[in-house]
Length: 105
Image (cartoon, rainbow, N blue to C red; front, side, top):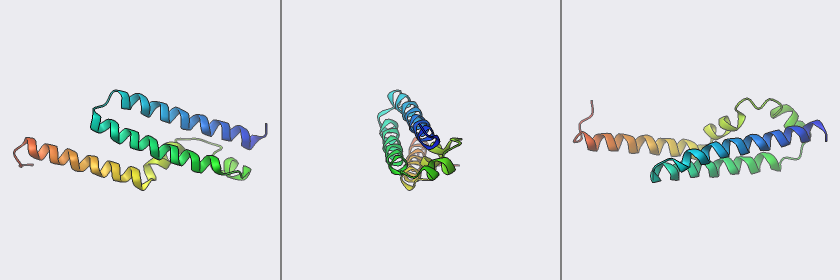
């Protein structure tokens, strides 16, 4: 197996690791949080498909030789993830506002 193929196998394993961690977290969450986490897993799987579709050895050697949280960074940079986080923040603010009778300091 050549170097790029070895890297590709490691990259796929890293996607598996992150997906597994998210799935474990989802199993312990409330329904609303679980739905958000499952949406993040869907983003992760889209990113995995995008990365694994690339057949150029140089792409894996250049961009993926050092994993260094690359999967996590890809998710954090995705606009769908940013929307999920923004919606969570709005829901948190709304919940806090409702629980304090509309007053926030």
